[in-house]
Image 1 (cartoon, one colour):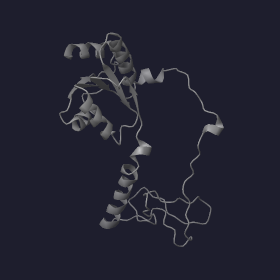
Image 2 (cartoon, rainbow, N blue to C red):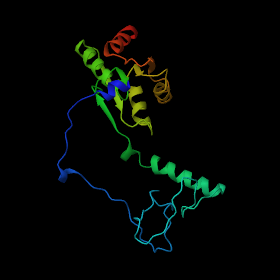
Image 3 (tube, helix red, strand yellow):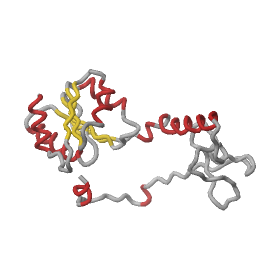
Image 4 (cartoon, rainbow, N blue to C red):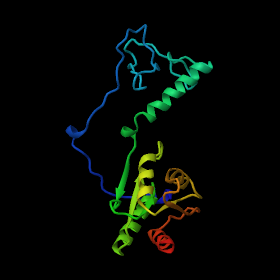
Length: 208
């Protein structure tokens, strides 16, 4: 798998500079004395002062209080961990990314990520050419997991195939969100050899 990624060559479309949106971090609006670099805010993303602008904060890899100073106080540590979680879960629309192919009328779905997503793409094109109503959902963000969309897919299709280069990881998340609405079938392979499109095609035909 590593060799496949390392030897991959393809074109990249670079946007013009005026097409790129620059989003700067929020800056503090309080005085230097009141500033807390890890304070909770409405969107759970605290303003960040630049270095050398007169604002003082402490940087540490330990659990810390809103000032950035190390802390082992339960309430303090709990609060900052909850803030970090909310910073993710309350901004899912900005974070979650995925690609879909031929899902509009699909009765069977393949959910695949990473390099196996390429094998799955070829498999879908091959099966579509044979008249199989199959589509691909390729998550680009694995965590947070796109729970809502996967649940929708499970209600749409009869079966979901999950090819992955391990003995079953993503398939567990898919099963959790499918909740029995669709049959979930793992296609697993280890040993360093890529799952080929024809192997996915064969498994789909075998079950379908």
